[in-house]
Image (tube, rainbow, N blue to C red; front, side, top):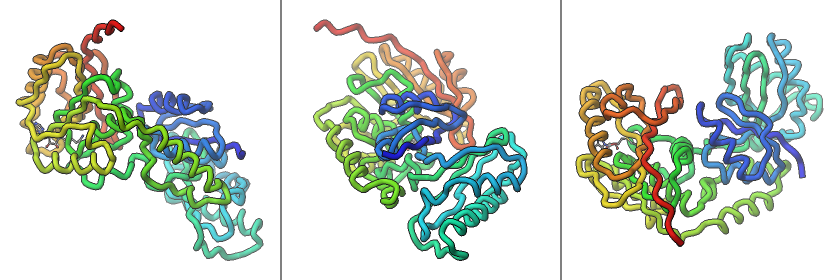
Length: 382
Ligand code: SAH
């Protein structure tokens, strides 16, 4: 099998969760940087990473890395990379995204066009042609510049991995599926514990949790760009990875997962999405406002993404809403509350300081993941 170095970008602040997932999938980490984790793997690893990782954004094959402070250096070093090992003569290739941090070269469009020219020059020499029709498979390149160090990756994923395929309809401000999964993984929740999302919107938290409970791989019902790269990865390797995912699913689990929303149309959407994900039997969705939140059992988890006043006219409602969250949480016996929000006064209005608080970038928006930890349930006697 061919050995690769694979790069998995993720949300800023969630590198440790992704790293743990990759190790558990069986691969060796080579580096962890802001917003990405790099690891070693073969073709099988590439397929399995795409299908099984819940918190990655995509999987790139690392083509190379080098230092460049001038466009001439960027051109020469890009041209020196072995592009022909990946891109066939009829391949369509382009630099889909360039991100630059603390580097002399910072204009994404210049980086993109210079690198494309360098790739053309390289492949002209290899394929002995002056013209590429580019009417074959697609090979999008992604580049990161960090302190003048250029890292070049080939995107094997296509549509971002947060698109599991189940969320055809969304709320106004849906949380990305891979972010929701990462946040659940940051809590001690497991399928034997109660989970309630009182602001469930399109159902992302309950659905991601149910998929975890059923051991359902997030990518088992979608396709990936690299499935068409049969010169790099044999079809049978993809089939084996999809088979593995299907065999691992356990539909016999009966987790206690609930999603509520004050908006009945959102509840209908959440149900539809859960059905598409194949987990509708594992979740109880209901139209219910926060003021009706209660639960007879102890030791449950609220994992949620409340409104944060994104629109000006909603801002004034936030203190009352978060005060109510605090009041409802207090009524629940021995529960834990995990909440991601951009609302800055959350702790003040809830009336309690979080036990832990983690800063997470949701795109460009700074948000906080507040963690109010309840007591652990007593060990059950066997
Ligand atoms: N995480 C969700 C998005 C949540 S947006 C997703 O991924 O789709 C916040 C949700 O809270 C909205 O759907 C809104 O209808 C709901 N909401 C607002 N006020 C509420 C209240 N008082 N009680 C219950 N739900 C409320």
